[in-house]
Image (tube, rainbow, N blue to C red; front, side, top):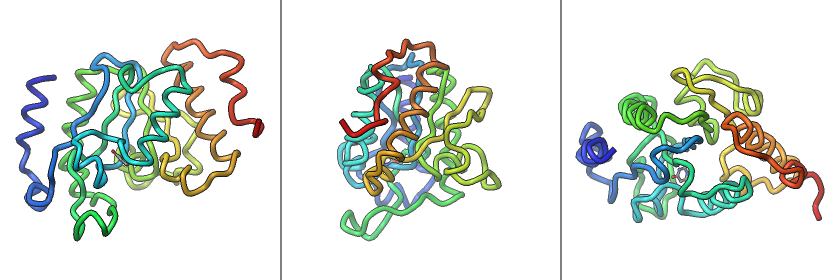
Length: 203
Ligand code: URA
């Protein structure tokens, strides 16, 4: 992992991203994790800190992981793209990675996967799912909750935590939670009756 780390940190294949980035955001967590989460790309805060999922969506992901009985240290968290897609400065928000950027960066994720050898992957949001499974696949609302495969590893597509921040409906939280229950079971983690009941009612 240390060798891969230094190779990714030195990557200069997307010259426009090299020019705009503050950090290369590799990934965090256990290099022997059973569950590997893949997001889209670093945002402004992630670019600033060099750590994936530390902004508002990241805080929600961290809460989801702790509801699963796990921690950021016991899973592995990374993104399709290791560099923030360039915009006109942090204030202008984020843009979706282009297909070329994804195709260029994906081999780094594959190398991370080969080292971590997760039992399960969770793809967060439509862009991550499309980046991993290809453009012709069904939309995220159809795919979420049903097992897919990426390079031989079971892949659970689910909604991006940023979507849950925009849509606070209990029904949407429950959908993501059911996806996480499936991921826990597939990875061999115990699931309590209490956990099974999360996000069914508002109390
Ligand atoms: N959204 C992502 O997809 N990845 C991050 O690291 C942060 C926000």
